[in-house]
Length: 596
Figure 1 (cartoon, rainbow, N blue to C red):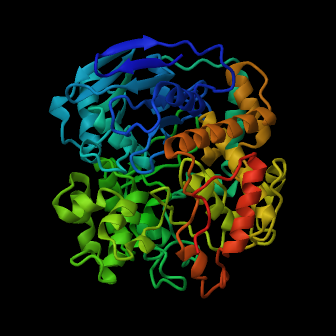
Figure 2: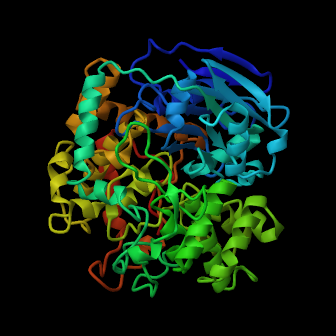
Figure 3: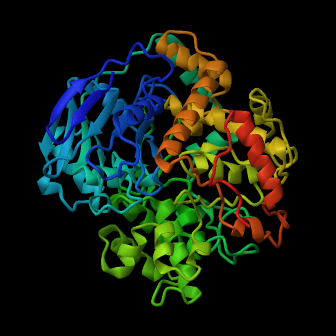
């Protein structure tokens, strides 16, 4: 039962959708509301555009893998549905305040915030918060509504309509991708505050307790869970140099050894401000905080703000990540856009632009983008695809985007399933929407995960192999992880590679909802979410979808190391794409062809 909030009139009503099956109160319901309540072709900044925020029927339950809230709206960056997820305590805060979902339309007459408390929603003035970062905003709202209040806030980037502005929950947990912070800003919505501590109800607490105990024990046996729990954490890149081609170096322009250092684990010693606190009900403590209270370090930050920019100074990277979270900037799109500008400058297309490796210039660039200061800051605030169109003269070749969104910095040339996911996921490229191909390589992969992947038809295969079966396998894994997204289940706790196996996940959902939940139900939810994202995208684009990767990934092979020769051959990629579509029951559409 979502609250329907009209910011223009401050009217709030409830809409009963309880009789509908299969949406679980998450992104599937949000997509239905977007299709029902908004006109095709609506500008993302139009007051009539719909913003959906939800814990759903499972998010916020005190159990492993259930601390997730979804943020959903038409993306200012891509023009299709943009979906981002926030881990941490915000989902539990929504449930504690008496709300499972908010559907927000209109534009407040002045900067405002929404308060959810005691099962009611109200609109309040936030004028004194204008220009504040997410940390200061959170502090001010907790001073007003209690130290235990949960806050989703935007910073100056959202207020200034930076197209990849993020929403940051509870200081350190961003809902980062696709510019949902700019949608907040366009609605004059500074924050959503949830005050209340009523626990989310569960049908079988004893079963949840048993699953929690199992998960706690697994931290010593599952290698990825152990990596997440320890220091510097799974986002704290450390150790030996990465193989050439595993990650982007200098805007994906270096297909050989990048000449950049990976920190040692000891380099992080003494830098952690604290841990952000375990997600409610989860024994693991994945997100570590470096460089300030807003410095929650996600796995993409080091690559996006470091190697992708030709920077390997850890202090610079950690400080930049913390500042991005405080200003409300998605580190993936920011890093991709600055890397694009650096390459354009190096090629003479952007005189006076930044240079690869210029760590000293990064803090100023971040500030300029968030505030749209100067011609360069304003240009880069549009994202690299739009900036390329303004620059012209062939700059488009250096914008590493799909659907207008910057691709993550895990290079798909040696892992073609990632490339298929980047190109074909109907909401845009996300690294956490599809498992890494290397995890299922028969030699180099995580053998303990093979039986789990096989249950959804994803059998082990050499990571570099690009054929029709790669297309089918990738579609099956995307459907599985889409099911996790649809139910607000945490991908960093779940099958195939993490402790919550398929059987644990289905038992967990059954224990919360009190009705039997099966693998077939999970996959059906995943398919429906993907179909909903695609239907919305087709409606908004007039039946054309951008499903093409940047040409560099098709034309420039990796030149050295164990991935030498890896490249996404055009003909093979097209065959895999066709198999991917067929597996999901999708008819190919215009605009998705692989360009020559």
